[in-house]
Image (cartoon, rainbow, N blue to C red; front, side, top):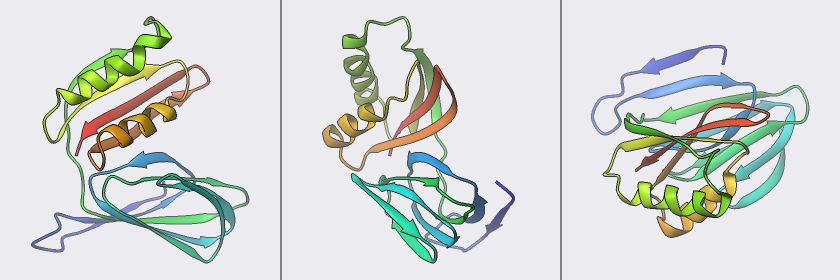
Length: 162
């Protein structure tokens, strides 16, 4: 991220943020976003659709809709975020010591106990993106998903109720 510009736009939307990105892990947010690919090319996920885009290209991403972008060449990708999300984080759940067959049911149960704008963090040993799709089908337009940190065998994701 090279910089963030925050504008006060008055009633209806609490803020507008504009930032330049170098790539974007898949996320689902509590606000509408517009992504503008002004240079380069890359692969994207939008909702449950995968594709390739070359500049100039834009993506309109609705509330709670998943979007991610992986550059394939030197790219300039801008995000215009129409709002913000502030979650109250309840707990961190380390899924790594838990048997694989029990992980998804545990996360689904914890999510069902959240109220709006509450969240928890999960730590996993691999990218749990299939869990997002399972949750999005079970709880349509209610799942917030944000990659907080990731390395080879360590993934930390914020999951919030929208």
